[in-house]
Length: 342
Ligand SMILES: [Zn+2]
Image (cartoon, rainbow, N blue to C red; front, side, top):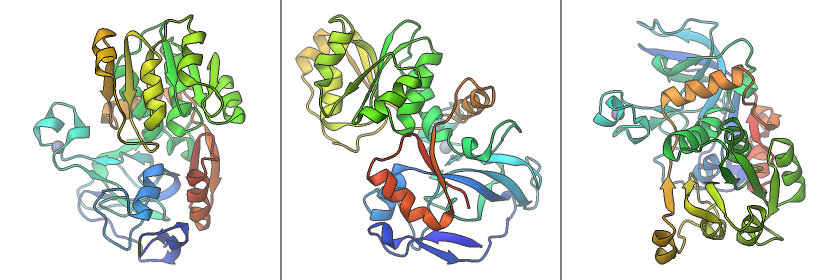
């Protein structure tokens, strides 16, 4: 089969399309014919060696997949050849105390598709059969590969970790990213009023079309001042944050009393100063959120299949253009998800 792999860490040029043996499913495993695979920012970190994740080179990236079951190994009853599926990208142990309490994101022996095992930048991927989630017929493979790291991540943040209530103000940062486009839609579905921020007028125009009633360009406007102005000096109840750095610091100051910043990423700055006096006097909450539970992923797949949420797809490129897909993300040119369609 064809696969895109890298043999050394580095710039986009290290991604090479190669012919590799098609894996055979062992007991409990399923071989999935990959029809779409999302390209995520952490793929770039893995490729350039900055991810702090344990990789064995050469490595095949790609943890968010949709496709068809091509073959199953001995003892597999969960799926059969031809089934349309999306494998869970978190492969948790199902035995530790965190797994037994439903908090799969904290599993003591967690593995990820496309990290500890070869991922979906390939024609086929091998996965544990129990991780397969059925994809309804109404859901295209491309949309099916654009749900887990966006909608499920945001659902966990805004429904489980905060939660957002009807009528509240929510600021969604990085509105053009996968998480941002999902954040606007989930916040609207929950009945919130949305302010979107991004770094270009074109992205903000599209954020408004997704349901944001006001927008802020943080490259030319003061994010804190503009959000306070838009909310009549009150501030927002919740910030859906995935940027970090100065944007997170400015977002904290844009909170209403009792407000919460929920953060799922920090590429623009991993260490942020916090004014502790303001934090406690305002009763602000700074909340971390990571990934999602398997149930939350299934909920989001159902909501997309029902048309209540709709993944925004920037581009679907052939496998041979994996390097171009990484370049688009590194240049922050995308609005929504970039996919590979092997
Ligand atoms: Zn576990």
